[in-house]
Image (cartoon, rainbow, N blue to C red; front, side, top):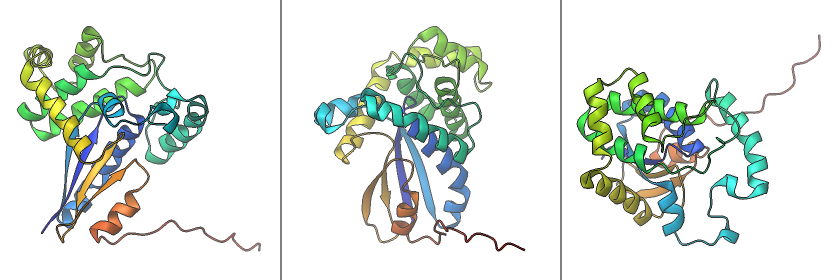
Length: 234
């Protein structure tokens, strides 16, 4: 049996951005091991509410707790440098936390109607717009329209159809179903990944820094981090 990764993401989640870029970078190598990836738009805010944790238990955006918000600047900067995300800010947008119902519904429609490449490039464009200064509030329909127009993937008629679809019940239900599926799989945040290995076993993985655990679970060859000795002085 081939391996598979279902990855649930929200464009308002910085670590969803990191995971998305990382998995795209490694998809061709994963394919040589017969491991496929599918990306699913979900609503991170819905997961936070529905997973039932209290604020004291920390089930909120990292920026919702002052200590986490302060640390996030350091961690995000390190992730930006490590994953090569030029221009991406280490601090959250001024309108954060933001409602992402509009772009996430639109992504459900784009995924169903357009080729996979357009879907994934559109998601990258939304991530960049949200997380790169001056930051675009994708909850604003006209600002969202501008991002779609400027990304070079869609005609004006396509953009009109995408905006219209985001208000249609079919795509509202699609986003709700994706979010419910993530919750049913144990999600409490984003990125959330559900992984099946070659033996047909399945387990969850959370975050953007546990891929070495995922490779191990999938039975893939990989190299661990290695601390090198200081060069000898001549």
